[in-house]
Picture 1: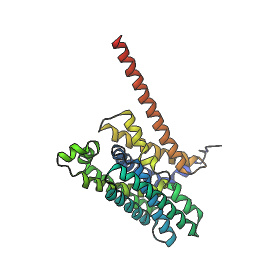
Picture 2: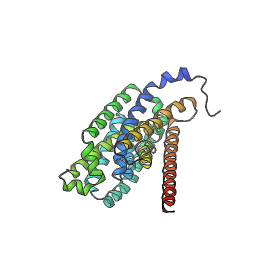
Picture 3: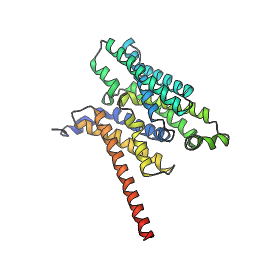
Length: 283
């Protein structure tokens, strides 16, 4: 049986921390994901996640806080990408160099680690069902910092993301905003890696926003839809995982991908309707 909800009422209280973590990640990921898409930084998310994984793996090996190691790895990657990758072409090259390096270092650290195998697996695919109070406190702190900072710089960052040349001409400090955004993205990736893992972080920081931008170009509606989609994937994934026999990550990624496909279908239907309307008017 794929799902068994017979013990659902007894199991739900055990995942309260996980549901709170999923809500925080949905809010943070949905908001920052819009800027990730508008700034064409999807590849950067993957690159940062690899160094976040490396930092977490090294921390696990030496016996220090995994979240702390993950944050250090993410911030190191974010700063390197921001400083060295001022242009899109340079940025992609730097990320392409960082990704295998981070993954290699992380795998080396995990191969030397003699502890539980579940700890190793969790860094790659997440372990949201096992979110404890310290991890939730870290996640809440990081999420609050990222969300508040995004709200404070929302308008200039949005301007700089959509039309950087005009924003620069209007006196917007686009370079400084770029550095701030990359640091915030690094923190968001570090928080997400603890929950969905380094391999699946894109499902919360990219896919919901990509889906939202498929069905609307409104600067007000898109972030709301992105947050809604991210919350649906993260919280819905946990609720399904409670009654299923698989790790939570496949549920989150599947829901997120299904939402994206649905939004693509809606966008395609709108285009067909628009073409049909134009054809009728022309006739």
